[in-house]
Length: 77
Image (cartoon, rainbow, N blue to C red; front, top):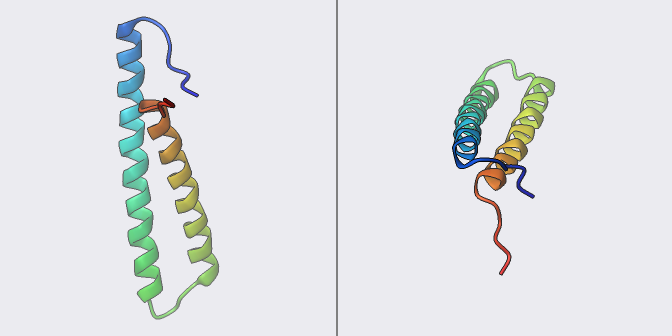
């Protein structure tokens, strides 16, 4: 369900804010992916740290999907 409501200008500001947050989360998701890859390749692998980062990455992915659904809501025909 989309929680965007109000005047057209307010709606555009809300969408812009959501898009900026989306870009930020996607960047953080990619950064985590890079860190995880480097940790896996290191000589002393900390599996617990990798698991924590993977969990954080999944949480970010969920947040990204939620934001995307707020920006472009599903249309049920």
